[in-house]
Length: 185
Ligand code: AMP
Image (cartoon, rainbow, N blue to C red; front, side, top):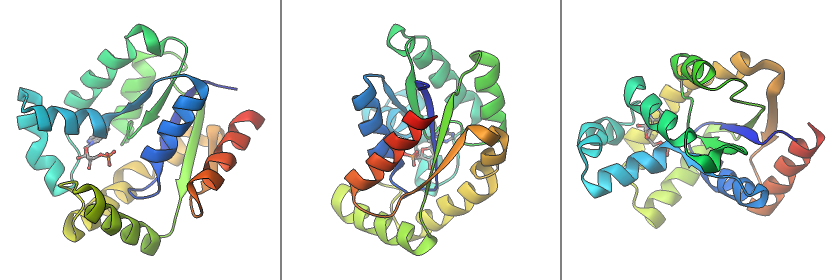
């Protein structure tokens, strides 16, 4: 089983939840660029100040900034034995940068799928529960557009490495589907 796993899928598909569960089950780090960026915003760092507005609008932070964060994180020793990447790469330029930085950077890609109505209703529910600044209807719509335009083409970039998983259902059911796909690969 490859331990260099990438999660792809639109906002609201459950990537964050499932990526964290898979990372914990396999004892490898869960590397979420969205979490790292939100952390920078909440700590008020220079990076946080630079990215806050872009994130609130639902747009992508510049490739240079995100690639630098990921490079630094992947160079830490706990990433030597594998990792679950969640939210990166988000476009072709980032995927190329990852390939350039780490040979065989990705072994398996998990593509979590859910239809658009389900995504919006999950994100609106999360808005009530977690209060994320970018979980409002306008930004949600923008993030879905950005996913379709920028990130969805990565499915063909990764080709045969991609496993499509139905993201509808209970958290444990979806987790089992992903584990089965990873074990089989
Ligand atoms: P996420 O938690 O993955 O949904 O990310 C939340 C927000 O952080 C996104 O809407 C972007 O503004 C920003 N972000 C996260 N990852 C990336 C990335 N790889 N490239 C550019 N922006 C990102």
